Length: 143
Image (cartoon, rainbow, N blue to C red; front, side):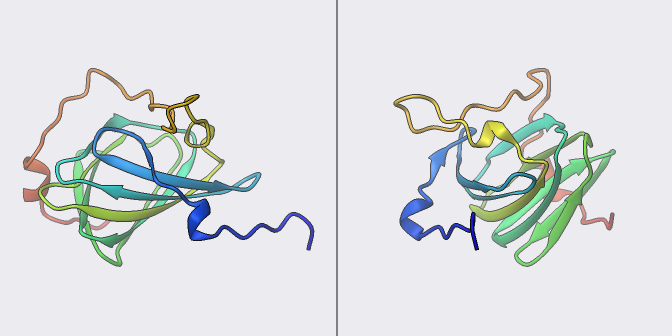
């Protein structure tokens, strides 16, 4: 089967992303998978993107804030974020590991800074406010 590629563990090197986050990304033409390892109190400030996003927590917890709601996802739980939905994400006090499926591909996750080995920093809204530990106190709500 032409075009099929297998990635070994050695191919999937973790690179810096936002402060407190490392990740790798694998993409085809129309879909992408990312893996993140996140330190405690890591924050992805309020943002949106064209890509649809499906996130599954593997270890720890992730809190998503969206539409005035909050959902705390634990290991094995999944959230589906539609295209252009404004949201923010934080880890709280514990580290977290998660995978994301994306469509279309988020090219910025594939672009690496020359000589640094880091993924290009995302263009998050700089006016967003970090809520910090308030995230972890929010009750889980179904979406």
